[in-house]
Amino acid sequence: MKRLFVISLFLLVCQTAFAQSNDKAGIVVFPSFVFSSDSSVNESSRNHFLFDFRSGYINDAGLYFGVLFTSMTGNGSNYSVNQTTLGNSFGYFLGNFGAILSLHLTAKRKEKSLAQTVTLSEGIGFQFDFLYLVPLSSWFSLDLILSYRNINFDKQQISGGNLQAVSQNTSNFSPFLGFLIHF
Image 1 (cartoon, helix red, strand yellow):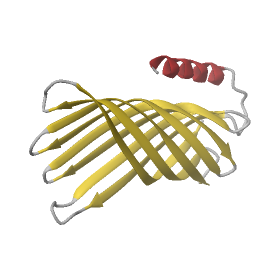
Image 2 (cartoon, one colour; image 1 turned 180 degrees about the horizontal axis):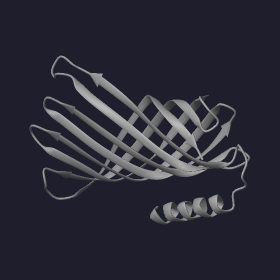
Image 3 (spheres, one colour; image 1 turned 60 degrees about the horizontal axis):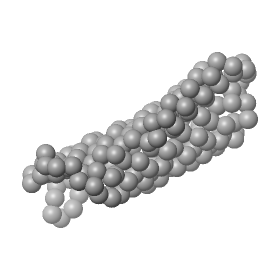
Image 4 (tube, helix red, strand yellow; image 1 turned 90 degrees about the vertical axis):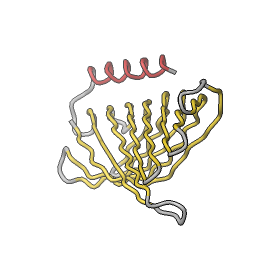
């Protein structure tokens, strides 16, 4: 998986170096975020903040190649969670619409409660994003994103104990708000 990430990053750099200069092709950076809060009868409110940072290249045909870094933090009165992922992204943009498939090649998650700390590692998964861009200038757009993410973790460690093989899955469906900067 790490080889795939390195190869994709190399191709991205090479393609950028040979890019034609026109309005459609170019390097793009687009961070996006979502904040959510929920509560239940048994626990006080919990807050979650998800942040996606994408960087890549869109070619003349609208094909996108890039990388994605994701960070999720959450907390409540007896609970906290931190998760990070890193992977490659491939997509297509047509007009104001875009679709991106990201492959999370590495993911880690730590959940803390009053009783224990659970660390999940060796996570891999995918994310599918559907974007609508609201152009505010020739180089800056507001992004409205619907995102589905699915990560499967293969290793688990509970409260500093032995590392165990598991198959634990996390998934979420979220709307994101962000912006795109086109260089």
